[in-house]
Image (tube, rainbow, N blue to C red; front, side):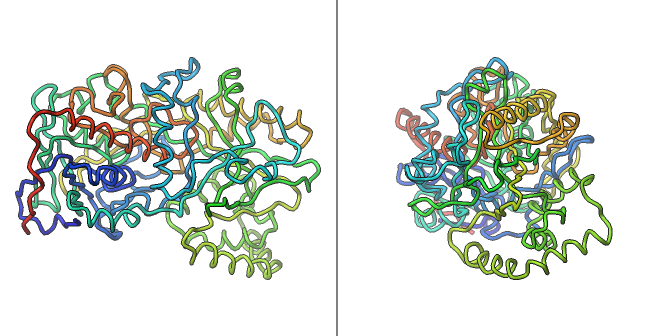
Length: 573
């Protein structure tokens, strides 16, 4: 059933077996997995069913001086479906090495085994609508699939893996009909969680206090609570619920809000194919189950161990879109209309442009050159526009983005790099408050010197590997590559590690079952619990861990001999 908290009688008390805070990928996956379990489920979503700009005000916050992090509201949505209302759909599993204790990565090592996570990836694929759990080229595209670069092979570089793309799936739409019809699942829209009330010291959550609007409060009493509101909102609520003076629930060891990781993203170097027309699998390909995939390169686990590298991937990219020297009418047309795209992705273009401003001349010739590219290639721009309408605008499964072949066989590398868990990279509560009186967030994201060193050395490892193959040359300036890497920014919405998973409260906020240390009936389903960030977009792993948590909660309920709460009563307006 779908209900609106604005229709509730102020002060009403609601009951459930399980209260889930957050109606995004994690919360709705968890609710879907528990449908038919016999548990009554109440999902609190701070937004409505459709995007409302006014509802986003509560996501505003601050960025610490000297941090290049985006404003806290960017890449997030208060709406049913959460950030999946705007995500690009990229689905990538973590690698086994990501969960290992790596001596060269401080605070690494997950308290769960790889098999514990991998068992849930196939079901997560289904919910994300990303097709089969197949990430090897031959497995996903068949044994006859061409190599990523013809003739390339090197033990340090894995070139046989790919990324899969969701529709992209908006979980608020894909799960709506099923959950709306589920008798034991209730989704309460416009329901902002404000505070979790616990006893003095450690102990279970006694109730959740929330509101639909200032002065229109409600209370939820449940056997179990799950915070599924994302890597920024989870620590915010835990901190705002502090009754222990420890800085937040689960913060006895001081880890809450710390170890904040995104991914260092950048466009670095140029890969020059030898010869320039050497066959390369650059474009998006479609699997037999109708899913778009794209190739990527990564460092082998052996190379990571030998060189002490963080997990990093790179893709062949198109030339800097803002620089008209690329001569592409399609890229120039994209640049000229960039202000019409979503602010989140407009910012990404602007960030890359600023990082490369020294490569361009911003005067009248700049705009004239872009216009000339469009006019010179007007037939190609028209063909592209028609294909974009067919494959993106009107398609159910959308082409993820534009790929343009380089005439000279030179491709910049689009890099996504892991960060180390850095305790000085963190989120805290600001002094300013939102309309409900809840403290806003302050974000202080930092690149660590080890992040920079790993990526610089990784570029050199990749250069040597391509040189050995004789298939390509990776070109970059040794004198400037460190400065270029330092300009890497967290332009995506990957909010990781702020309530990390660890065996003890000394090292983290939640345990191996994602239960908050010291608060046995409170769990977290979010990338906030990831101890390390890998190179991978987090959504697929978020969903996998939510499904794992659903099984755990069912097991807890089955073992619980105490009488359960009665079913959720009808909620009066």
